[in-house]
Image 1 (cartoon, rainbow, N blue to C red):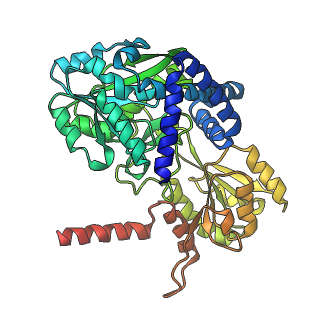
Image 2: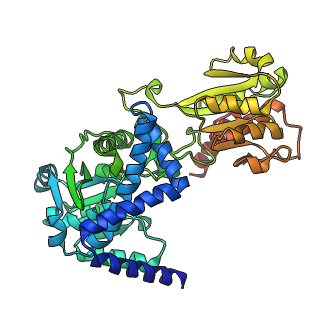
Length: 473
């Protein structure tokens, strides 16, 4: 019932929008976007964090704040205009849109090559699902989409897009239909710039590793299709421009290599008009629980011209134990964490009296000596340093958890400890009480393993599972 009420509100809002001239709707959307920038603090901070990840070394803080504000205005204008545009006849819609370099697509299709279009959430990206038939209507064309949560709105959207002549393939129903269409010489558009979760391949995006959908590369390899990047930009008030990039070279390259090239194309598109991209999406999301990559099926791919030193670091703060013996026993866990991802940058926060020990561990990049007993002083010192992506807490104390929580570190990992579970957002389960007493070093390795690191125990288990699979086969 609630879905239907939301659907009615959606259709009512669409009817009102359809009565307004498109330029006026664009201006009104800019105003709504500005209001959203003021009110929606959570999304404003997310956009600021994303912009800093992409342009932190290229733009001043003032320029980045201005970019975020302009992005909210553009997003509001484009979303509101898309409501009216999708209800317009194709001929009237096309008047508002220019296109550049369409020959890059025509050349492939007329040569009999299928085409996978690498799309991104730029400007009024919804237009892709409606305007494709105008430009490549001489072949079957489609987009792969994710079903909307509201089935009434979803059915309406599919019906409108279907009238334009674009076939819609639900991502959850598999890709057999898309493969058949491509093998028949058609074109398939895929939005390729969102976090792909555990099933993605980790490749650089603006210099930082990001989980990227391998689907465009997989379809291209499976069907020998050309990979072509297509972007849409806001060119004026209620006007847009579609720009096509040259086809990617695909000389029997791996899925990782093609995915990395696709990210490079999207990055170049965004740099052309950064205010048009969807910065309120958590593109560089930290996976939970395994933010270390060695267990991921597709793993990490770095282009040949890029080394691990060229990557923007994933900064991990490890809070050392206060006693020398315990700190020494945690060294294997630190090594496992460092080896868990190529961009890991390890900072050890340790009491000044044992800081010298950590200087002997080559896997540690920075040592932060804690002087005195002041919680406030420790927090202020941590906040002045580079922002951390995750904090791994070896001690079980409440004070240690408060340090990382008050420092604003988004991911905080450790055992439940003493009255501190509310300060952690990734709790490592304790070892079963049955059996022999767990050695302290194994206890620290359990934390590393809980973050996705491969320890000796997990390697042994992995080998055992492989042997069992071989025997079962």
